[in-house]
Length: 196
Ligand code: C5P
Image 1: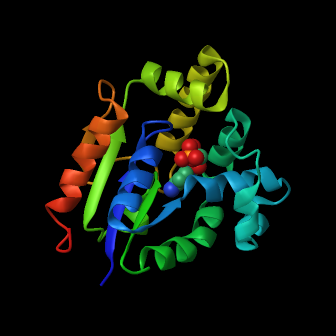
Image 2: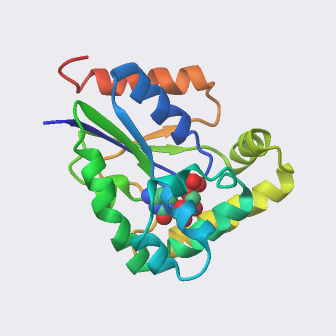
């Protein structure tokens, strides 16, 4: 039975960095589920059709990281049929041996409610905006406004809103270095993963 790690949290909280580091450390597969929604948003046209026809090559588009792609993603992510169309791909991915790390907004609550470890990664709005603006080379104030708009939409939507699963461990990375946040996450996996 593969080991499953669910990592959720608001935009730019550090969940992507932590997920990649855990996958590397334990030899697990990693899926950034935000990319699926970004790719659907970037296709334009009918988002439900785009989600049903999503091709792995769509995830390689170079423009998916921008603030605009994030906004488009969060708009299509509020459509229940778009979310439904992406469930099977994510659940199948979670079954890959020897394990998988999936990061997003609803992994611990909807996609993998039986995950062996659930982390809910948060950080202050200002720290998240600073990190994301530096990562994508965008203006910090503009990025802060974009993150807040996206978080509000993601938290308020009726289907699979952004929220911590009841059994998730919250990791506040506001005052942590990347190394500290990753060490904390590794320790949580080690205490649960029999082969660690
Ligand atoms: O994680 P990232 O910021 O790339 O996600 C982009 C958008 O995709 C989020 O703002 C959210 O609306 C949507 N998303 C989602 N569920 C996920 C992952 C992302 O609704 N599991």
